[in-house]
Image 1: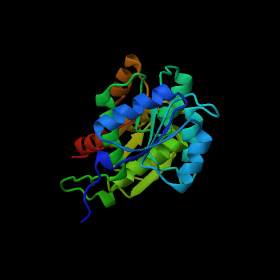
Image 2: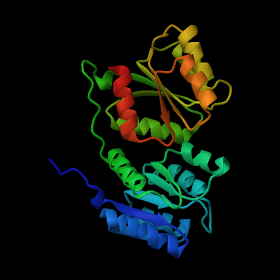
Image 3: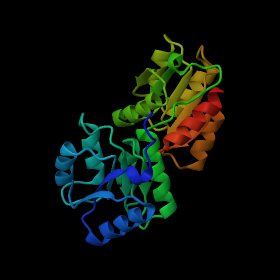
Image 4: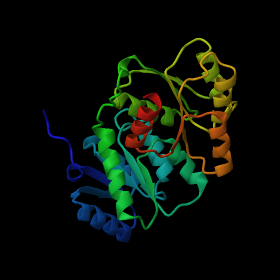
Length: 265
């Protein structure tokens, strides 16, 4: 059996136009023991290199000379060869206009500038968990038999969540683009777990949860809501509607694993 991958084994591509910021990130990674680093000042050159040498993780700032970090991760997610590479954002950007698409794209972490070394280390461990996940073990439950419905209006988010679930050993995954489509699917199929976003058109996650708990034939099905919503009043309403657990976007695979284990056990 091969040895488990360590943080020090990670090969990381860093895209940062500022030489000062690059040196700071390099120093922090070196301090943790990560030495296999490739630095690029723009996205196009980095993407070209990724096609030749696929890294374990891409770290980028938001504002690049040739595109935004949002456009970069969306480009990667649309590329068959690059779509599964873990992505981390390090940026001083605070605008939801830029950050929300990043959260939806399925990223390992979004760290501020300057970032905390503990948060960087935790994000690297999340990268390892994504690359080489340990299968989820549940007493008296066979993961391969679980039917899971993933509901999210973002195709990149659906793919990312499905990838994390597949890594845990879950094989039967159905997807829906919003709550309305999910309701149609639920009326014709039975599921063991629903993983849903909060903000969606036509019928959001709260409305979907309320429908399931009050009108569906599967009123007791566990519901895990993955959301970037930070408004406490909204989240309080979601909890009241009947979700089994809440998880932030971006999420750590280890956290999703723990929550699924908790609500299914």
